Image (cartoon, rainbow, N blue to C red; front, side, top):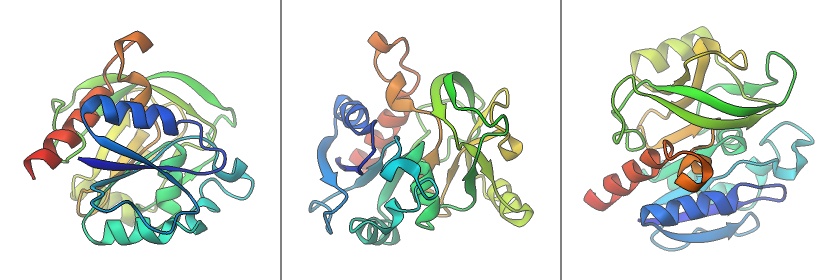
Length: 222
């Protein structure tokens, strides 16, 4: 699997994401936001967490207009895999690759702690290594992680089994406690929690490693 990890000014989880993907067996290339093309043969585009462009306008909004944005859209439109974590999830909604929006946390405070997630579907390239309904502990660190979507969009997510993860205990006001959602073709995942921070036993847990293992198995078999 060839993965491209995008870095914007203000990204601060790009190295962690690259390390997690490399540990899973991926060949990782770091891509700067001013690059207009992805490396040849890229299977997965990974958009990391952080504060792209300082979150000065709206989280992810400026990043969605970077030179690399068109390449990410083209990759997704061609059936390529895309993973957006935390700020990366915000970027993917701004790119129009995922529905809904990430709003200010209901408590109006930055949340930085471990959260219990429930795996809502295993019918995706990102979650097959887990069991249906499995609960995993993954760190969160966000100020604008309150996922909102209109009733019609929520119904579509539910009917199409596109809710990937929920919070076992609501932490930020997200509708239906949603923590991660899939695109219609199930090849794009956006999630607020940080699996790359739970992919090494030395960091206190490896529950996030299953996501990267799932991707590796999917792309190797493909």
